[in-house]
Image (cartoon, rainbow, N blue to C red; front, side, top):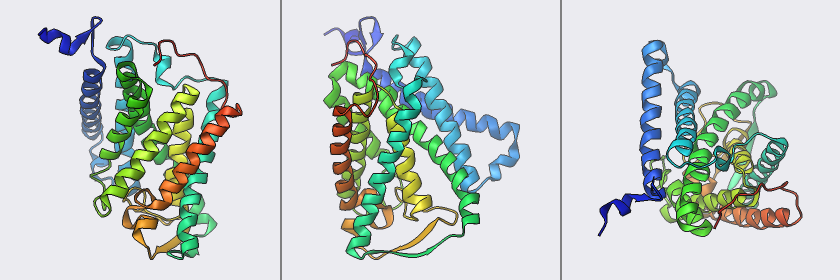
Length: 301
């Protein structure tokens, strides 16, 4: 057996190994960047709450995107445009459509809890608080969405697609996406539903990339899903509660299998229904040409 063939094909590291190296390099790069920031400004070590979240997510996103582009050019030897962040006339259009999908699916999931009587609205924040907290919350959630989408549905998805084709690539990245959230609070309370909900979102996002050839729709959906789930509706975002007053205040009386309980809708049947509807609407939108033109991607499987 040629041991070199296990790692090398066509004079390049095989896609699976490239993904593994990318994950390690991205995490190491984010940690190094954070340490450099602390060395330059020690006061930032004491940041807590939203400030600490912004700092950590910014380092992770910068590392993921920077290393991803560098690896795509040097290690993969593939066009940078294939990672899906090309700026153009359709980028804002697809981002806005994605935001509508994310908000709509989240409202649908929350609506199931309202109709069942388990989730009840107990109050609303003053407009002054909304104006104070929603913009920075949207900023940090956008940075977090960029880090996850570029990593999962950008670099990893394209490498797995090259190796195994589209269906297997979508499944592989959805599994990694779900597993990456297992360290979040309350993720093991309803483990099967938690993994299923996160997996299905990963499939939805990967499908949007295959339909559009871009990350913009998935990025908009990811941002709006989290923004409406937490800062707007007041529900946990993958087990994380918001460290500031949310636009709506709600109580969750269950059942947890429907609403997701302390982890949030991703761990409930309500999100599975919403994502299922979202997949159907996404497909119909593509058939009607509503998602915009899809750039050609030579060599796709």
